[in-house]
Image (cartoon, rainbow, N blue to C red):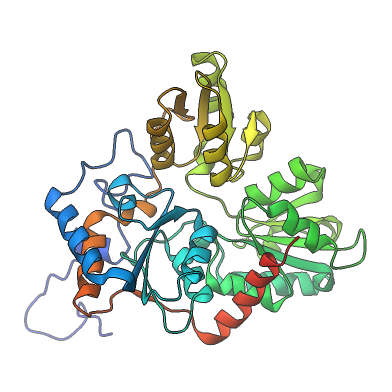
Length: 400
């Protein structure tokens, strides 16, 4: 594209992009909508009530042709239109179980829609209401970076001993890399099973795991659930030569953790735990395994999103809980259980900013476009990537 600032023209053009243009290009943030970074208050007020009726009308017009998936972290005004709710993998499987639906509208983030496209039929079309709804964790591992990491492992003479295990919260490219190199995918619910499987694939005491892209889930599973030591884990930083590790460190490690994390769960700290215990005597701290290791070690219970929901469903009336996960879900659980005291673990309010890009205006636009026969924002994984990514997903599905 020609740079207009250097073009020979008789007029001095002011081509400074507007804030809106930068926002649409993904190069700036709107403090009124990006509530997941510094967010001392609530989300913006619910959308125009007219949008609710428009969404209902468009969804009714589409009938069985559309199937709407809503991730647990979505805001209430969106989740009300979901045919099913759940975590990322559950939703992808639910989509695959509805072959009669021509359109799968995924109210989540980009990697989730990719997984749904991989698992659904060729005649089904997966749609993401806002293409800017990404995942900072998934973006922390690119195909080029992971390929370079594998070269480092090869040069260290250990690549043949390494089995990649990638978290569901990864791009289709990373899932494909995992499948191509004999690895599997995991969720926060089955990470231990996936690691057990991985370590059984090679010689005892020789096999290593490259865990992508969330260092905290990998470390917590290895140390807390499998009895490894922190010294068994090394951290590979893709922004440093050789990942910032020596050949000896790589050869001695059992777990090679990618330097990635969840921007929401990574906020919780030991101070958060200490503070809530002081403020609410008798409180039980329940956190997601994407939290830092010291937070997980200090918690009373640790579990996936589905685990958190089930634990609070089963908790006795009058019990007190501080939950370390995304705030939309925590609020929904608090409203569903008025007989229990349920609070957010951190004093600072923190929504998942990218997940909250899927708002009611985007959903209405998507449904109305589909109802008018216009396919918008389709997420489509190329054939080769889909083939290898599906291999990795199928290995996970086959786990005992």
